[in-house]
Image 1 (spheres, one colour):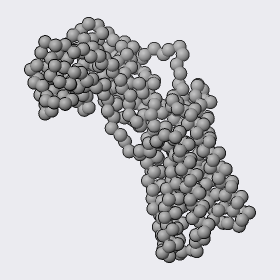
Image 2 (cartoon, rainbow, N blue to C red):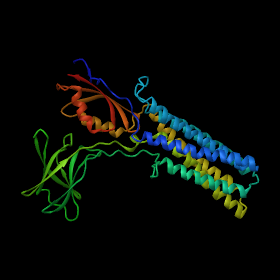
Image 3 (cartoon, rainbow, N blue to C red):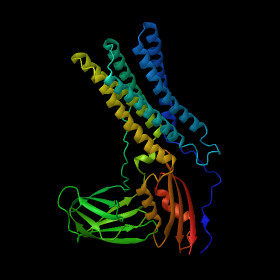
Image 4 (cartoon, rainbow, N blue to C red):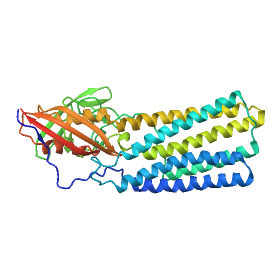
Amino acid sequence: MSEARPTAVPAVHSHAFLSEGHANAERRTWAVIVLCGSMMILEIVGGLIFGSIALVADGMHMSTHAGALLLAALAYSYSRKHANDDRFTFGTGKLGDLAGFTSAIVLAMIALLIGFESVSRLFAPVPIAFREAIPIACLGLLVNIGSVFLLSGGHHHSHSHGFDDHHAHDEEHKVTTGIGELTLTIFESGVSPVFRIRPVNGVLPSAEVVRIETIRPNGARQLFELARCDDYLESMESVPEPHAFAANILVNENVYPLQFEEHEHGDEKAHRDNNMRAAVIHVLADASVSVFVIVGLILARLFGWLWMDPLAGIVGAGVIASWAFALVRDTGAILLDTNPDLQLAERIRSVIETNGDQVTDLHLWRLGPGHLGAILSVTTSHPHQPDHYRARLRRFSVLSHITIEVSHV
C-alpha cells in the first residue's frame, strides 16, 4: 500500500463559515433589542412613578429576554469581526450555536421559575389586580409579536424542532410526446439512482415503446431499458454518478432531448441559524406566556376562577421547557460535532464508492449555518488523486471544507 496523500491546500483558503444572511440577522436582532429595551425601561420607570408593582415585575421579566437577545446580537457581531481570525481553526460559524445553547439554558431556567411560582400560587392563591395585569399582558403580547416580525424579516420563520428527512434529488423534466405528456426524474431515496417516467395526464405507456439514452460530456452513451412498476416506468439499470448529462427520451421512432443539471443542497438543519432560532424562541416563549396569562386572567375575572391564572403559567412553562429541550438537543449535538445528516453521509459515500473505490473513513460535521466540513479516507486501485474525488463532491453545495486522503492498493 502506498503512502496516503492528503489533498493539497490552496494558498488562500477562507474559514469564514457564516450564514448568507448573517449581517441582516445581526441588524434585525439589534433592532429588537432596542424595542424590548425601550419597553423594559418604560414599564419599570412607569411602574415606579405610578406605584404599580405588576408593571415593574413585567419590566423585569422583559429584561431577561432583552439579555438573551443581547447575547445573540453579541454572538453575531463577534463571529463577524473574527470570521477570518487564524486562532479559530474552523472559523467562528459555530459561535451562534454556542449562543443558542446558552439561551436554551436560560429558557429552561425561566420555565422552572414560572412553573415553581405557578404551582405555589395554585396552592396559595394571591389577590390579582385585574385592571392593571390584563392591559400589561396585552401590551407585552403586542411587543413580542412585533419582535417576532422584526426577527423574521417580515417573512414566515420556521421553528421546527424536529429532524427533517434529507431528500437528494435532480430536477423533474416534463416533455410532450406523441403518446402524451410525461415526467422524467431520477429517483434515489434509499435506493440506487434509477430513472422514473410517469404520465402527467393519461395512461402509462408500455415499457416496450419507451427507452432513455444518456450522453455524457465526454461523448459516452448509455441506453436504459424500462420496466413497469405500479403507476410508473423504471429503468432496469441504475444511473451512474454524476447526474449531469444530456438525455433523450426515445418513444418509438421519435427523440425528445433533455438536459440534466445536478444539484445537491443538503437539508434544512444544515442551513438553520440556531442563534436566530434561539432569539425567536425567546420572544415566542414570552408571547405564548402572555396569551396563556391573558386567557387565564379573563376567565379568573369573569368566573372567579383564580386557579386559572397559575394553571396558565404551568402550561406556559411546559411549552417553554419543550422548546428549550429541543434547542439544547440540537445545539449540543452541533457543539459535540455529531454527524449532522446521516443520509447526506451515505450520499457522499455512494458518490465516492464507484468503480471499486472504498471509503474507509468518513467524518462529517457542521462548521456554521449552511456550511459542513468533511474528512474522507479513500482506498482505490486506480491512479486517482484527491482532486478526482473532490470534483465528484462538488455537487454537495453545503460541503465548504473538504480534506481527502487517498491510499493506493
